[in-house]
Length: 234
Image 1 (cartoon, helix red, strand yellow):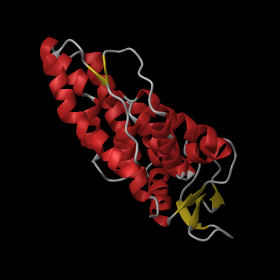
Image 2: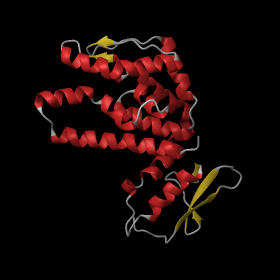
Image 3: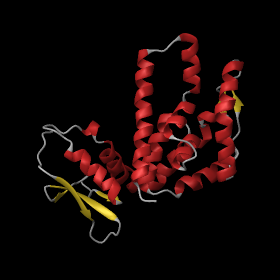
């Protein structure tokens, strides 16, 4: 799509204290689903304004991650918030951190060193104790632990849910996503922890270009979601 506007701006949203509306040449921007693009807090609004302002002759949606996440929160999360929260919480039942190597002692030692502190943090913070298993066979998690995690996720607004969903999907771990959300760990460190298995295999067999491209993409998704969270009001 060609750029069709001269100026991007933001203004307080009428009737919604603390919320801002994005404008192009003074006209309200709509989400892809035609909803009003209203976002909480001026920092996020100004970040989205900057993305629109930085577009050149042709609009490139892939260069507008804050706009994309905001639209996701408005169009896809808010109308089915409970379902999205449930999907995110569901990662707790098969969290990456709970599945350990059963025939590779070196990898198991790395997993224990990297992942045990995060599981201990989750137990201390949320009261949930997840079961750990060796190998790939599914392990049943205690219902109480899953309920506590679901309660924590269910407290979040649609914008935080959109960011958390991105991080959890990219890392395969609800615990790592919550760790970033609660500032227990940085997005860079959380992503590194999610790549323990991949790094171990790469050390043994070398790095594959396709795998490295995927790794770069996923790391970018986690870092973008964290930036989005940082722009939301406390």
